[in-house]
Length: 301
Image (cartoon, rainbow, N blue to C red; front, side):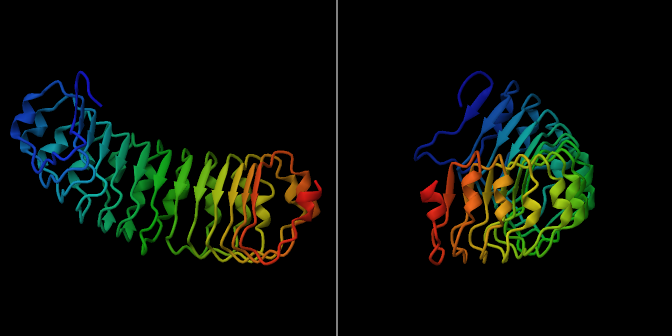
């Protein structure tokens, strides 16, 4: 993006390896994008950018931030994904106006206390890392709407994430989760939940309370039967439950009146219930890679 108050690095063969100290002379700058370069350090003069609202340094070689970064209190968006951070940059904890923070695809080991200072965060992406621990203080981020923790193999989920009542999107893919707590019912505004690639085989009864849920992915888990808790979700539109070991769909699946797409491939289904033809909103059903599925109910409809 180019225009008054913004600078973007060119998307061609000119790769930046450093940022000149003179960048600090651009005191009116509001938007700075340095993505996809080879920058390993930021100059101390970056603190002069007192009007900066968006800083994108993703896909570089940064392993730390200058201490002066903590003075950029006008920042609302900070993108640090795909760098070389091995610990959470403490300078971020002073940026109390941050609304978007992405740190995915680094090798950070933990999210420290102090994260509660970022009370204006709306989007937090921490996926594809080495995180094993997140401070319980994350529960103070009550404005948070989007949280992604996927593919941190040894992460122990903090119990306070279930108190983030404004969450609309939650990605917990590939975290070796074996069960969900009843407290998940606290996510009353959740619209999209992804639990792909875990070890789940059932859902808690309280899952029925996720009345706002529209998209759910529980594929590549250990389900042998269709979770009955899904039947009562009135807003569910897209359900992915492929790559499990389902053998049957319940006859009352037709009561899922908002469901438009149902992904059932790579299970152990041998037939579909006749009631499936009564699903009023269904647009697509994928039953590929199942043993000898009888699709007559679909054909006859």
